Amino acid sequence: MGDAFNLTIVFHDSWVGLVKTVKRTRRGGENRFDEIPRPNRLSDPLVMSRLYRAMEEKLAIQILYTSMTTGKDDSQWVAPVRFASDGERIHLRAFSFKHHEYRDYVPVRIGTGSSFKTRPLVDDLPIDEDWETIALIPLIPRHDLSADQARAVRREYGFQVKTLCIQTRKALEFYADRRWGLDQKSSRLERHATEYVRPD
Image 1: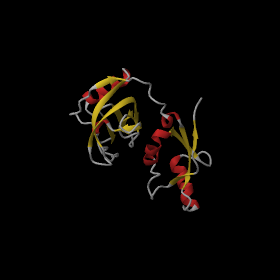
Image 2 (image 1 turned 90 degrees about the vertical axis):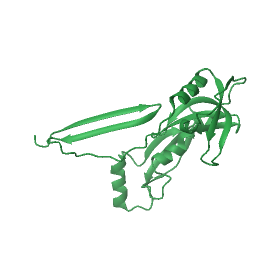
Image 3 (image 1 turned 30 degrees about the vertical axis):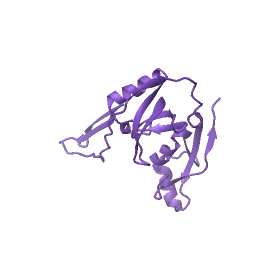
Image 4 (image 1 turned 60 degrees about the horizontal axis):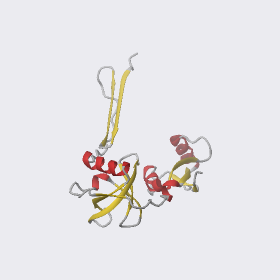
């Protein structure tokens, strides 16, 4: 067949970054596929290993973290509990002894000059309510779209019924909004409602 082509897709998703290589060539060598480059966010393997060790051994660890809100490099003690991905980068979920609550940290913003001192957790950590709570988010085409536009959006996102329901942890809800573009004025989708449930 004259239109035959070879398709090679390689995904590599690791703690230290995301690399996606896609090559699609038509017979004769003509390129028929391209993509926008992804940011290659690299986390220091030593930092990741120290965080993971603290997590596994139930330790608090002292880090130097650059805040995107204040711009300060704050030294603080945190208790790492898990890693999560928003589809673009890895986040660390940890209890902050400075703020007395669970927070998300981007490992690449943890300075390699951190002391990384550790200490055993004397008391049990509080329950991470936002992590344990599931957010059920039904989506619909934006209310001000025309009927034809709404039908196009339903085709684009693969609607099978009236709403398209996405499910995530409440702790990751902010990233779900950003991933689906719900925080953008140009979004084609909007929330119909949001239900929060706690699995037994």
